[in-house]
Length: 446
Image (cartoon, rainbow, N blue to C red):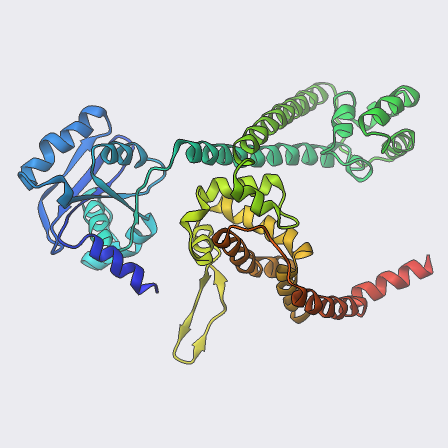
């Protein structure tokens, strides 16, 4: 537990009146708590409109607080969905201090008040205020417009990435049902596959295709990677396909569904490209981006997404702050003689967690400091995903050190010497593994 941070937060609210607010779609509930933790007056609600927000400051609070100075009042808002954002923006621009409380904190604090799990809006508003007084909050802050713009682009980029993967999975599921041999011959996520699927879907469609005509078009789209040979394979597979046979109206419905998925994929890919271009245009000139891309394996796109999520890398003086923001910090279970298995908390920014995993996966192949950590763990126990996650702290330490010293990445010779020894040991271990032995025997027999 970070007692220093909690102590600073408690000192920040010492002697101040806290207004706890439980946000909702139609109306917010508020409760006022004095510096000693006792509720002042009755809890009240106000609508989520401009008139309601004005009434909060001009009518409801003066009834309870009288003529208290604004600097003595702190608003604590529970960050439920995005219901709190408009009120936080309104209060911040009126000169009030706003702090944010996690719903997870209020969930665990709720039964402490009355040793029951009942949940009401007045009770939740009071819980939000008391949790904030204990120091479990983050201070609301407004970032520069440029940082907010890149952050919004990164959020949209992530949403489109997921939607694109979802629609590609739908196309793959349709092929597995109608022509399961197709994905084994041509990757259904390529432009070549999209070209063919726009014209042919069912096995009997591929039996009737013109090999000579389509092979020229396919070679042009795939840059000579695919051609006549793959089309002949598709025709041969269509003769013995195990796909479900569709008739009449069923064929029309399947065709319309596939066309809808393919059109959605093309639209998403176009928007995807535009977003990435705009994001890079805004981030590439930054020195922080140039330092990040000096790490081999961290490309321009990953570096831009990382900076968009952390907003301003210079705000972080310790790597654990970013680690916790992403939810990669460890949850410990130690009590008496019992020591439980350590797991990452996964309570944080899921987008940043995905970005850091991808960065760690790439740098674990190329950057000596990260590669050493990965190999040590792989030699001890082979588990790619777990060991890549374990490399994230090492990668973040490098990034923070580069930012603190304002320099690009430079490897050290002593790290390379140790890395060579680990590489030799790891390759020997892989060669002796049962899977590789069976694979070599199968090749020799063939």
